Image 1 (cartoon, rainbow, N blue to C red):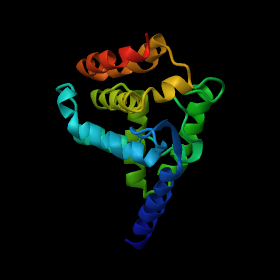
Image 2 (cartoon, one colour; image 1 turned 60 degrees about the vertical axis):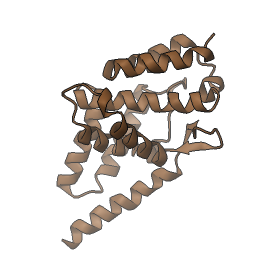
Image 3 (tube, rainbow, N blue to C red; image 1 turned 90 degrees about the vertical axis):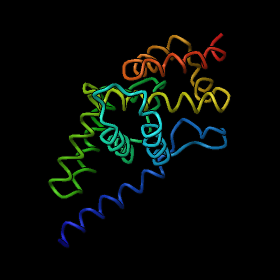
Length: 194
């Protein structure tokens, strides 16, 4: 029991470091960069509130669990913005390898059963092939869009994002898991891409 608690609290203490990882996205009021801990909490709330946008086979409780852990790897890798470019670009082989190593280390702090469970959940989110993970990815893409809308353009201005880039990098993933949500959000973004 003592060893298990030591491992559980070692993981929880390490997870606290996510609060120090600054993201490219700002808070909705644009006052400062959001941190990855805030992002993960906000996404869990998105899942709870937007559950009616999920498909019939989506288990919202699993989605919430995924979203609470999906960015823990940023403790080691940092935030890699979706509109970034270069070798450390979002989704690049280098970034994915670094994130996998981070997942090994961070989830490896847990007792074996919890480590396997949470790592499998993280892998499922990354693969985005199940109804739960597809919906979770949709929410992960829509939350920064909403922050940009609220903050007057946010990272779209910083990264010179075009309507086509927003559609392919973000919109397609939102639409895959929550098509009605993307239709609604796309209409809101139109004023920023004229």
